Image (tube, rainbow, N blue to C red):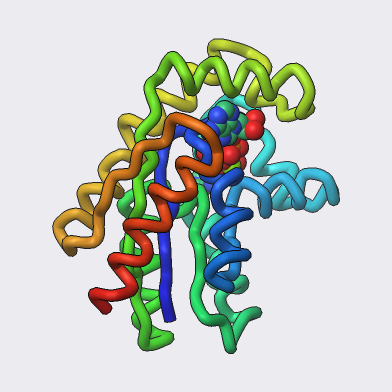
Length: 194
Ligand code: AP5
Ligand code: MG
């Protein structure tokens, strides 16, 4: 199996690049953000709880997202590998993921971290907020809160995988295809090593 974490701050292009990468490498795309938004649309109790956090730019509690990932992994027994997008977002989530994968006799192969300047991130998110209907893209203070949460709670996840020598940075500015090429380089390199 090949298990990849696509990592980066809000607006760094995780969702955009994930769509291309899962097609190219035949991986299963697991985006906790998308899964939570599906729960919100379906008006489930989980969705209603999650929305209170998401609207404020805060993280949904660890146990909720870990439970979602656990059942997704079980739903894809024959998968060639998984692409985690927007997960893990806390060190507790990373530790839980490592344990879940260990139970399946596999592990994370690579964390690819997209590098994008804050100026570019804000531009992309506000731009999307005009059309997407994503409530967390509209207000500048909610976007700011998401960045703050990323720095305080999510950035340490990179360190967690750096100590396992699985962390690689990737230039995340330029055209979508240029960034895809940058990502494919580190992925192909990691696949050759394993
Ligand atoms: P989530 O849905 O994961 O959002 P995010 O991390 O804030 O990131 P985005 O999805 O906004 O950005 P992205 O990196 O995917 O970039 P994208 O490709 O869309 O999380 C939302 C919320 O859910 C969280 O705040 C939290 O509340 C909750 N949540 C989710 N996961 C959780 C977890 N594990 N634990 C706890 N809570 C969780 O691109 C952004 C925009 O830029 C798009 O409009 C795109 O078209 C554009 N764009 C992309 N690439 C380029 C390019 N190269 N040039 C120009 N524009 C580009
Ligand atoms: Mg996304």
